[in-house]
Image (cartoon, rainbow over all chains, first blue to last red; front, side):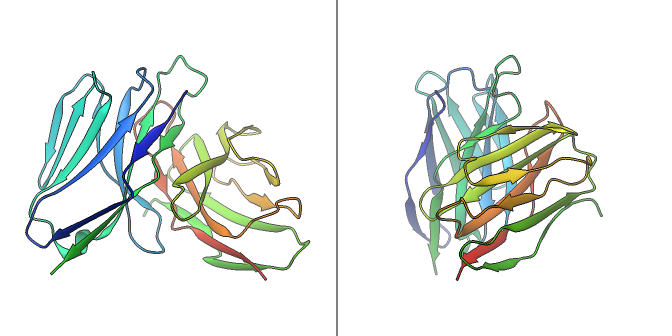
Length: 115
Length: 112
């Protein structure tokens, strides 16, 4: 079955790096995503990685994927107070499955950045 | 500007009433989704639709209904059968078979 797990809270100091971790159970995942949600708003797609990649970098964001351990992480370099938000990881499955097109989300990690 | 619009932003419902949440997109996306968000529980899928006049139940469909009469629109009705409807409701859309969803800004429903 599909299950995505994240730790609920992360607190960092401004200027430090943040690392948000996620584990998933479905080995047939095709894409894995990171979304950001600010208070009272919808989710904003930050980045995604295809399952045959190990790493993807996009400005301050680095995504690492360990397929063997089914572990995904998001590193935010030089974290700013504006990065304070809830971060969700999500997986989508193979096109051949009945879950095609659906995303399964983790519970979200609340990132708090202190000045 | 293309996007996905949810209305209203805040909605109050009395016990025993049905209410309908609106979701409209002008992105020409085939698929649309409704999620419910509760604190500490992430997003749970209520219903989704991949084509006009067809939709599928998600993980928590009981007490909800949807329609998909137009590609652009996917309204969600929260019926009186939904025992705990107070939550933040998010609508999303995506092209079929492509990466990522576009989300609306959400509707916060409160039962009074």
